[in-house]
Structure formats: C-alpha cells, structure tokens
Image 1: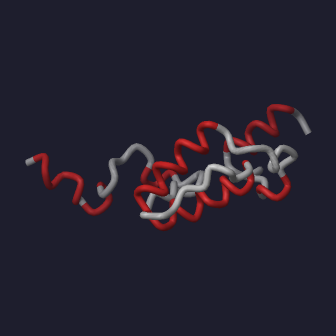
Image 2 (image 1 turned 135 degrees about the vertical axis):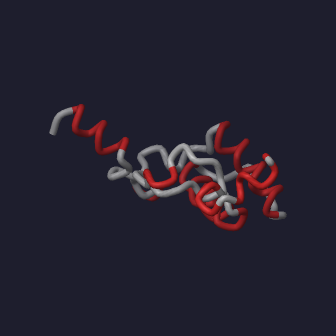
Length: 97
C-alpha cells in the first residue's frame, strides 16, 4: 500500500483507530484534548477529570459531544458541507432578514 493511498484513506475517515489500539493511548491527554474537554465538561454540566489518558480523553470527548450536541458530522457527508448550521431547513436565515 502506498503512502498516498494511506493518506487518502485517512482523509476519508476509513482509518479511524479505536483508542484502545493506540500505541500512545496510555500517555497523558494532550493539551488540546484537555482544553476541549474542559469546554465540553462545562457545557454539559459534568465534572472535568484532568488525569485521563489520551485514549480515555478521546472516549470522554465523544461522550460529551453527544451530550452537548457538538458531535461532528460523519466524514464524507458532503450533503451539508459549507452550509451553516440549520441551513438545510432554512432556520439559519431567520435572523438575517
């Protein structure tokens, strides 16, 4: 398999690895994970735990995204790409008139 092929697969979301399979999953969470988890925890009204590993933080981010409605669209979902939230039903234009 070529590097280009692997890059294309990664870009299309076909290579999402389970956090349990990450080589560095047991290392402390990254600064970016910590910052995002703090934000999500506050929005969800949940306690923030700064002692999570990278893999644990990744799972917690997904849980909190579901609770807050911040879950990103599935990779490759081009139907709404570039459209503002709510544009599909016209609700995004309400305040612009």
